[in-house]
Image (cartoon, rainbow, N blue to C red):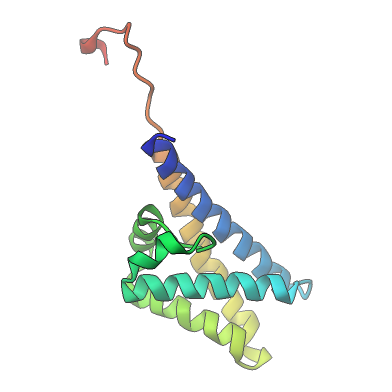
Length: 143
């Protein structure tokens, strides 16, 4: 697979993961959630974010199910969230998983907002990576 297609697929994969997590969080707020699915996605996001925060990029090639597992995805994440925002997301995920129910809907709404921004940036990067095919019949000065 050419590098440009690989890069585009990584952006799309990150957008898809973010979308699925947002969907599970909305279901959670509405009381229709599947706790196992939400817990699995939160755990995956948490582990990936902690790896990014620790700068442990070598783990990415070893984890096939990582939410954020490539340099393109890490770059997208760092373009949209600062270090303190990554810490905030990690804290919200941990609270959502571990703390009393009264904090959870508010935390879920904050996570929806943050992952919506990440999804939008991933989709933007996906769209921006489209290159116009070169027509070799076209004169060079016309390109």
